[in-house]
Amino acid sequence: MTVEPVARIRAFNRFYTRVIGVLGESLLDTPYSLSEARVLFELAQAERVEVVDLRSALGLDAGYLSRVLTRFEADGLAERSRSAADGRRQVVALTSAGRAAARDLDARSRADVGTLLEPLAEGQRRRLLGAMDAIQDVLRPTDPVGLVVLRPPVAGDLGWIVRRHGELYAHAHGWDARFEAYVARIVGDYGAGADPTREALWIAEADGEPIGSIMCVADDEHTARLRILLVEPAARGLGLGRRLVDECLRFARRAGYRRMVLSTYDAMAEARRIYQRAGFHLDRAEPVHEFGADLVDETWSLDLT
Image (cartoon, helix red, strand yellow):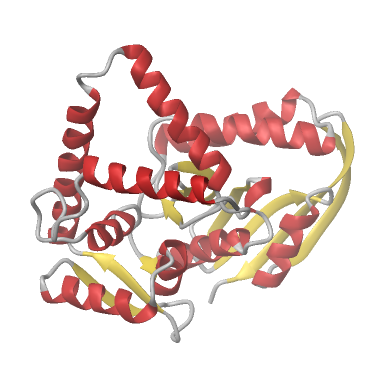
């Protein structure tokens, strides 16, 4: 590589870090460095995060991240504990004070960027944002999934679940619009009257975009039903499906269910493997013609006690 591209990139880095004000000891007139603020931001995206996932997503040295989290704990911003799924792993969660600090940082950052954009004409803003998109597209790692958080649904998520189920299964299996309508009824029933003490829906999110979903609803007093497991193709093979199922099972046990059931089809091979590895066993299999295809309708179950 010639010297000129390297020199131009270094010059840009010096220019931009000065423009956005990250060269000082603290960020945005807060007590936190840029790295500490980024850790705080990532923690605020979920109820809790495994420390190993946080370190991997941010590319931080284990010792440095441990010191940051120790400071957060001393300041009353975060708490660490052992993972319920794997006692060898630590999870970290923000306290109410930590979430307040994260909200303050987010508000300051938004105001700072607003000040940066305000004097620009519309055409200049489009050029700026287009250049930023181009840099991200070119330099983005080959692994498209960064830190994945599981969160409750927000506005627009229910529609996303319906749309992506319809699109993905039409493309993969040729299923017609009746499958999308079937998912819409499931999601609609949940949105119309879910019991938050016994029913829950999770969205898996990475880089601000939904990449997966799962739902736990009541089948009867003692039985929970797992529904709408979905993992975007770009996020498959990374263990996200199993993570979603594990979260659903943990919730069902905490809610007092004794058993979990699910319905699926033989064509959903990847999902069936996830269910098998989680301990579900096949109870019933019946040939059917649905969604314009010949399928085998299956019922699986797992004892939660």
